[in-house]
Length: 451
Image (cartoon, helix red, strand yellow):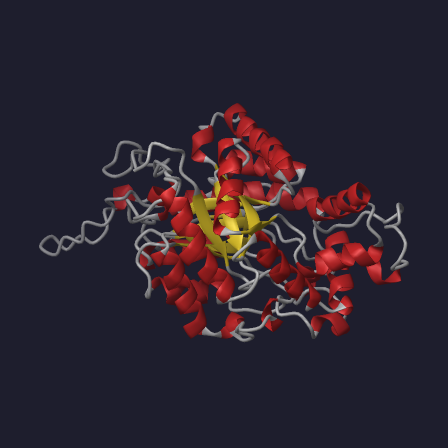
């Protein structure tokens, strides 16, 4: 292992590309979201490149955009994450498997059981991305007329985390002797009944599956609002975030890790992994031309709908060639996303049309250049403590993924900042995270925190 600080790389794969024009790019697979052979090829390529994890986000509703835009977007539909990751766990052996599960529209027992199952199926490679769900349309698919208020969603999420992790600790690691001679399958003294009764949740327990291989699957958190940052500081082991530049990254990194220390946690046990689209070319100019070509494939109907989602308001009513209105009403959608749109429009003086063009494709952090120039940027973020690594999004597939795994990764390895081989078997080992102690069976075999 190099003595240099090491970069972590996860791959954001739901949908296979966040860029709205990706499915139309020359040579791309338009059916990739629903093709198990394609997805198998992608994850095996990522594992060969020693990526930490394959990350599936999730939506619980069709995106709330007009049909004129919906019909042009590949970002609307994809496989249910657990079904897909269970299948992919059987064609891989090392790469982590991360999935989103909502604390607003699911129940703790369901989430605990699914992730424990995935962790066992994959021999310790599961991760739970905690989300409260930003899309208000999800409410109507789960018997509600309105989306719960932002603060309420985060209060439930915090209690939800306590319940899920408590359920994962239902059994000591050595609770199942399976002693054929004595006829003892379970040592009942090593089973804990949770009996949780809180403001939001009432769950008896225990979970009807053995403790996960990793103790707990790795906890990922994706919110950047005030409550989201605090939830991350108290619970997360990896943070999926979207700072726009290195200075914003440094501020977010320091804030979340500072909050974690204040909460009594080890800052080194939280990995900050900003999302970054990577476009690789033979030259910087070649990479930029690829990005321009990609952006040109986004129709305005789709672009303005994407802007509407980010704002939580119908942007099609705004003057396309005027500035973003100052009196956009507050909504119950993502606070961070809305604030980012307004900040970008003001900072760059963009018209609604220009802003829509940016959001219609991909508006987040992007590294566009040669393997060497992109490696320079990633290394700068790592050394500046703006990131511990990146959640890589691909501009188009398969070419975009192949350029990262076959050209960028070898350059990072040459610099000694990314592994050449996996040194462990579990996702916790890849990320350098401790195995959590079982809160109910301290001192039992396997229940310490020495991963």
